[in-house]
Image 1 (tube, rainbow, N blue to C red):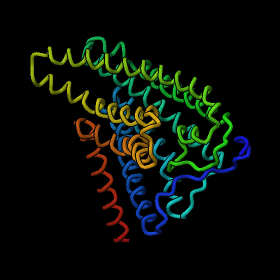
Image 2 (cartoon, rainbow, N blue to C red):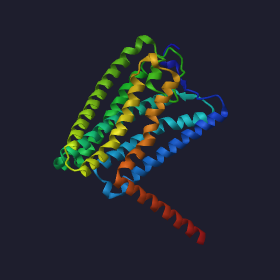
Image 3 (cartoon, rainbow, N blue to C red):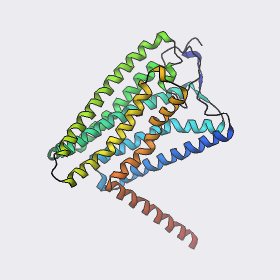
Length: 320
């Protein structure tokens, strides 16, 4: 193929040629997808409906749930459809859309996690100034900046990636369109543009990483100075969910995009892609709800209300 204009479709990774295993993959992905929809949907509903959860951290958690829903909805539905219908094809436009939304949502999520570390830093290290530094207007501005940075990141990488000539066929060794896999199809002398965009993104990502690390160093120093064990436990409970989500997101995403080609293999690339694009959206609601007492109470209230309304509707329908 002379260049990308001659590519009208791509072939995604086929997990297996055995029909029974294809259906097993479909069922597994469907279960993970439904769990992510349920968990993030419950968080969205609880934060939106319970006035006690109208705090800055819960507002950022609502944005995180939206990003997680978008991220997993970009990759899994197409993979499930391919497994169910025994096909590997994705259109050129569909592939470009997947890369755009993955870059957009992951970039925005990383920026949002950085903002959330600032929120935790102010809440623990500067509690008397919390309302003035993290008010409703500041929260909206920081969330908008996170979404906006993700959008710019997506435009930069999507435009750069698909401006490269594709000379190595159209087979993508991944279950969704991923930038490193598309670059493998490009001519070797056309990498400079994408490397320039990658250096820009890595520099910004490193800056966010340094900010997160600095924030948590300050947080842990402040927590260890607290006189009461109850105060320390409360502070750690506020921070540990966010720290767990940041660690899972950064470790898998950095390994996926920065690992040397010498250790790359189809099976390893597949596992890493699942870890950074599928596992966090499904686990984040569980991580946050386990350590957040108010959120657990709101979720329990919401579920019991839904069950009682369903039972009342069933009994009313039976009487009719």
